[in-house]
Length: 167
Image 1 (cartoon, rainbow, N blue to C red):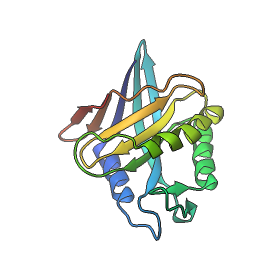
Image 2 (image 1 turned 135 degrees about the horizontal axis):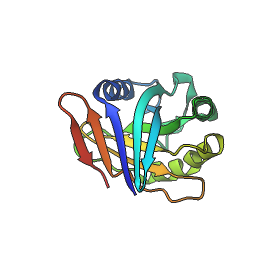
Image 3 (image 1 turned 180 degrees about the horizontal axis):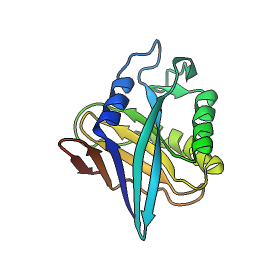
């Protein structure tokens, strides 16, 4: 399956700026991107359309991770998926240059909460994205018990257009 994630330069700038803000105790910021979908044959196009940060009060103090979201943060994102019939992607950054990857903690935590989005918005795929300063890497959940393929291509739509392969 070819999975292509597109985001405008302006929206990506908003996401990156938010994720760089300091927090009182969390070591990193996290948020959610809503997207629309288009599919044909073996191609899935994900079109990012809006970003919402996790609120300051929705972070939990947990020194074992860079950031831990509360159940309220996840509940609010699930409500967004259900109300807007949107695909929802959890997003955070590792900084640096080049295509990043998920940490073992990212893999563990994504597997815990991303599949729950399929129960409230089963018409959409959901997933997780990690950014660097120059690229991105992502994974998609096609359903609760379905395969979780990686995003194969990202495009930042603007002038100039930037495209990179991630899987």
